[in-house]
Amino acid sequence: SQEILPVIISLLPLKEAVRTSIVSTSWKMLWTFHCNLCFYGPNELDDDPSVPPLESDEEAAVDEYVKTSQAKLKIKRDKFIEAVNCVIQRHSGVGINKFSIRCGLHKEEFDHLDRWISFAASSKAKIISFDLKKIVCPSKEVHQFPLEALVVQGSSCVQSLYLADASLKPHPGICGFTLLRRLVLEFVEIFGDFSGFLANCSALEDLELIECSGVTNLSILHQLDKLQHLLIDRMPVETVESNATDLAHFEYKGKEIPIVLHGRSKLEKATIMFEGSNGLA
Image 1: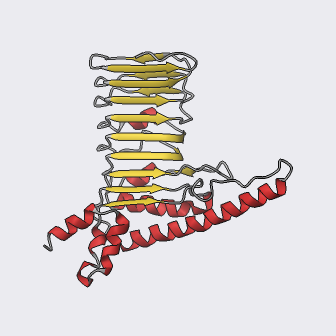
Image 2: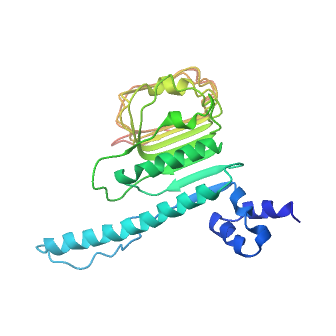
Image 3: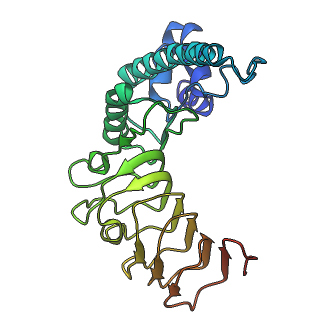
C-alpha cells in the first residue's frame, strides 16, 4: 500500500493532495512529490463582473469603483503568490511533469515569476505553461520571459511550452531545447531572431502563434523536419515561408500576404482565411 499511495496522491488535484497531509502523519510529505503543479490565480472578471448602474456623468463614482475592484484583486493576487511560493518551497522538486501558472501578474510582481520559472526549470518539468493574460492592465509593461532560464546545464527537459502575454528575445545562441515538441505563443512580443531560435528546436512538431507581434517575415527553416502543425493567427507578418518537409496541417488567419510552403508532399490540409474573405481549405 505504501507503494500505491504516492501514485494515488499524484492523480489528485494539487489542492486535494495537500489536504491529505492532515489525514495521517505518514502521509504528511506525500504531496511534496506531486507531479503536476497547476496554479490558477484570480481572474479580473471573477472579482465583480456586475458594474453598478451609473449615470454617464458620474466619473468619480466610476473611478472609485475601479480602484476598489483593483484593490480587491491585488489582495487576491498577493494570497495567490504566497500560496505558490509556499508550495514550491516545500515541494521536493523532483518528478514534476507539469508546471502551470494562470494569473495576470503586474510589473512589481515579476520577481516571483522569475523564481517560479527557475523552479520549473530546475525541477525538469516536461510541460510548462505561463498564462499571464490580464483583462485590465494599468501599464503596457509585460514580463520578459527568460528562455535561457529553461536551459539547465546545457539542456532543457521541456517538451511543451505555452506562454501568453509576455515578451521574448529569442536568438540562435539559445540551444538546449532539443526535446521541445510543442510551442504555443499567444499575445507575445517577439524581439530578435525567432527563426534562428526555432532552427535549434529540431524536435518541434506543433507551432502555434496567436496574435503575436515583432515578427515581420516568418521563415520556418528546413531544420524543423518534424514539424507537422503550423498555426498563424492574426499576426502582423508580411510573408510566411516554410521549408518543413513533414508539415501536414497549415492554418493561417490574417491579412492577405505571400505564403510559400515548400516540400508539400505530406501536406494533408491547409486552411487559409484572409481578412474579409472566405476561408480556403
